[in-house]
Image (tube, rainbow, N blue to C red):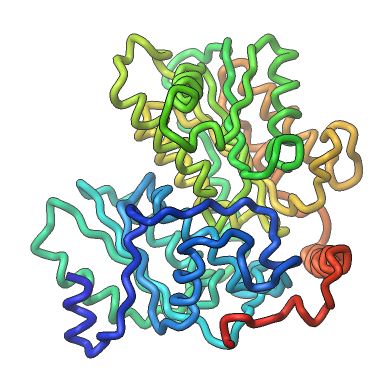
Length: 427
């Protein structure tokens, strides 16, 4: 149907990538494509052809089953690795910090999703995500559409409207204050339906693809886990790589997470949502909870998300926390709230959080508040949300320090500074 619409518009030079049948690696979050081999991913697989096609295109259309308001693991593997089309350097665009473009021209961005039935709240998240993705990728135009089984007669019109969209990404982002209000609303937990009960078991899912002991997500998770253990909870840590392949280890890990009284996803932000690996965990847990007798699982488990972002503004996390909320409701969890941390580049991954000072002080205080509330069965308090959302230093200073940091990493790798802006696909 999409191809027919494009052909009717005279757009016949179309490349199609069937990601469900394509073997792709996931982004490992090491940023080699910025500071070692600028513009080129370290992993050589079908993604190279995808990146070249995106670079060459006038339009990019992501077609996917809507997964908790965002993209599925299958598509996210490819999307996460498109960051090589960007430069590591920071600039301010539409109120917030973003990465610069590597190339002079980027394609317009369209997101076409499929849902079994209508859900206006999830549909709104899908459109928010499309706009944020397009803004990050410096797309000149953005369009989004949803196809639902209950309204098949409207599919052709929805696709036509999406392709005809002249919307400019970020045009509705009018104030930081408004975005902050959206973030706080997404981070706020559901009203408690009964008397709060302390969790006996807590499962942390660490969504970073980095090796154990090297990620900010793990550092934050262990700092919070220590606090929960002091309050009497039994804490387990699971890494997203455990859930990647089918088999007994993955099933054991999935069941352990699904069986916990409280599950906390500690993850970085990738392309305005969760990394492919973290998305994979959520898909597996939701599927298990849907197929398992409720008597075999906690009656009303709770779910929270601790999301860190490398931009100074925590407002970037607003859409990801809406996705976390949608997951919680879909998988039968009580949404206990989100913890959005901006400026996570100020946290040193290899040093325990509680041994750090300066920019980490507000983070430690926020985790004290959040863990204290979660340990007695309550939601993440608004005070913790507001503390974590504070920028550790002025945004302009963070951007300047960040750019220096990228240059220093390139120097350590023996790379000439001019090479950071290489454009290998133009050749």
